[in-house]
Length: 115
Length: 112
Image 1 (cartoon, each protein chain N blue to C red):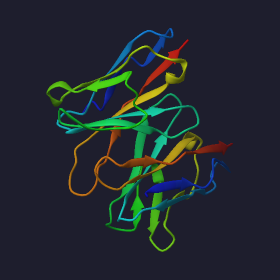
Image 2: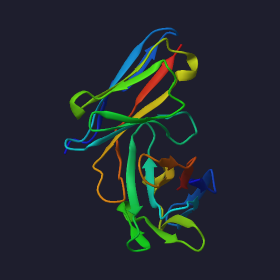
Image 3: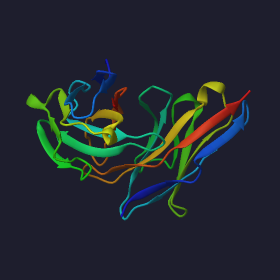
């Protein structure tokens, strides 16, 4: 069990550039979540996938954000035309939903800095 | 509406003394509740979870939490703090579907 991995761990970009992050979930986990965490705050839900289907998106996810999970395996989160307010830690989590609960396992995160 | 409130933004204890991190929740349904820990520059690690079985839940590293429905609380405790426990702790509620809500976090400081 290699856990959830994210790449890159750090990304520094200039305002207006596009960035893409990757998340590899624990194998056989059917759910994959993306969260954003700003300094001093708890993670905030962005979006999630059940297998390859994106089932919910937060209002935090503007039109500049897009996420995919082709074939229900890894996922990518792309931010177009980055803004300084996008600077945050982007966390990915995966889970295998069983019964009435959903235990999520988190990756180390990608820290984005927009200059 | 579902929510969690962590009652302390910072808690400071001396090494070897008990730890208490407080969490209250609000939910119209029977929730699942979790505690996660986040060390600096590390990912979130699951400490323990409550899923309507035993109300006293034991987790990793000597932590435990008690679900009290009458008080709508899920406080995290540890009998004796260790320096390595210094971190940010998050209380989390899951109420079905995708609805996972994190508290604002409690930063635990451990003094030598």
